[in-house]
Length: 153
Image 1: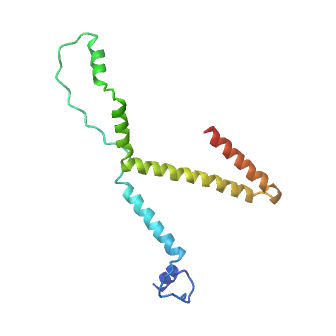
Image 2: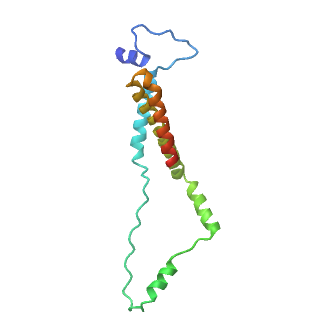
Image 3: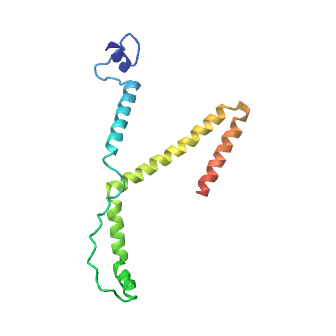
């Protein structure tokens, strides 16, 4: 138990001086809290799938007398409901106001930022694996490739 207390306290056999007004949290404690929070999010994610509920099939209507050939085309045109511009804007505003849409947007932004940082990581790895005199050329190549691919997207 003492080893566990020392691990959470930041290592070292001697206790660190503690200011009674403020207790300093260690990096290890922050990492453990972040890990537990991520595990909680993964568990809770199972309750909030992004897929819509499937509609149950409607029971088949009793067979009617055969209709003329033009009737199915007329029925298909009756089923389509055209929204007015105001109704369409209202429906879009309702959809955008839902928490699901907001969380989806935030998720896309976060993953986009991760892709940007992934490029930075690749550039750092490449620069670290070459000679110092070639590092600037490698980094400029990575920047140019990233700029061109961003423009192409």
